Image (cartoon, rainbow, N blue to C red; front, side, top):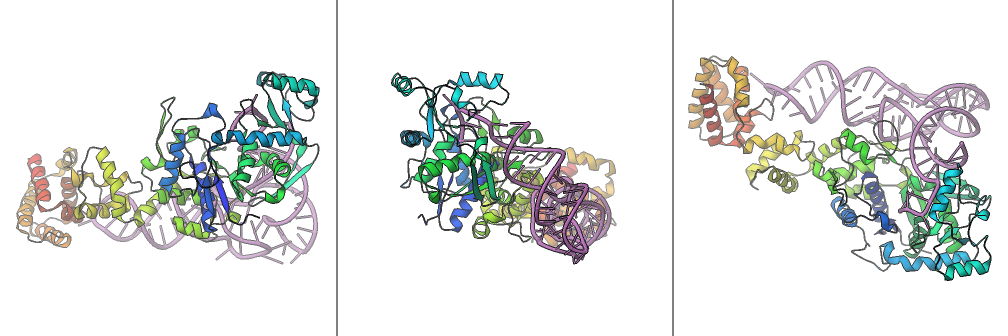
Length: 504
RNA sequence: GGAGCGUUGGUCAAGGGGUUAAGACACCUCCCUUUCACGGAGGAAUCACGGGUUCGAUUCCCGUACGCUCUACCA
């Protein structure tokens, strides 16, 4: 018996990896790590028609960004390779042959076009026990004809012969006992005409060969599980079959249904982990990373979308998740994705992460906007000051740009109507006062400001907003004396001075 | 159409035969802040429906409704 826990994430390289895929990968990873097992990445690229250039790399990059890197993958192979199904092509035919030899599968020569027209003319046509005897396959054709068709390289597929009226049961780790009647499924294609296996054959063969002990996959696979179980029974024996867990779907926020790229786009939030440009259509899709998400927040949010530890705790680090995750506590029902909540997670993670770790990404954001910022203590202090007001990493720019660039004059116009000589002389005196200061610290600045206001007989309240606008250019931001302190003496005075000049 | 799966506030959800049915997001009010956020304190808001079982169902059972997924030589 297998005693090492081995799980796999088996995505198809057909485009950007979306939310649901990352969550499946995450749950796999958490389970593997919690049990000291292995997390395997297998690329399910048996449909060459849907292969998209760059998608594999994207999967690898996503897992790396999230910090859930596989122990075995096409790029880091273990002893169970190859890890791309396209490179395993030659191993599936033998198993399909074995099924035929034992009467569990058969050759079918019907063309895709034939079947399509059949489906069109007959409402609910299925290639099943009701129809298989009227179709063109090794069940109906004489053996000699089958042989000659095979010898003349006539295209064929291999189909599973679903048993009649057999109850197939299994215990899902999330849903409990599930039952199906074998008559309800059609005779799925196992090996395609191009020699590639379909998912159904490949998943069973590879899970066996890779010694997978638990398979966690999306709920959309639940209805085809009986086929996989039959294949396990026919090929390897049920005692070696992995345990199943079918994860609930992530639904769109409005209405119902699976969260799609379209829906996300319409509502203005990302669905892919990182930026993705489709190589064929050149269509660009913004990712969570570029939107300003921290990977810690991204996986935290994903983990909680369908799982909780039974307490009120919502913020978990990856290592905490590894420790506390349990597949039994995963929800059965799908969850609507809530972007506001996703942002909340990010906000929490920004607040608890040291600026020194955030800095490189913030610097890049500034750089992309054409602003070079120094990697020094003063900059760190600035970001620490605005940190709590940033929900997304990109907010750092909006929240602190005035520290790095002088504000425009539009703000000045808003104070002009209430501007008077008294205020003018106050600020003139403020310049003198601040110039003479030897210590440039927040409380000294505040006290000096209030003293001068009192001496001039003006309430500080009337002066704070103009002062703020002079330094910031707008009405919001951290405490104004904190801003002045970090702006520095020279820059603060320069901004007051030029504002005064402007107000003349 | 068929099958499977699901259904606790607007959303994520805890709970589970007797509870004032947690908590979080969002929303509203107030406090804090001489700004705006953060933060703090409150508020409104929920067990899909109908039958059982039971002294008592949101919880257990059976139906119904609704939703979702699947029903390809796609995964």
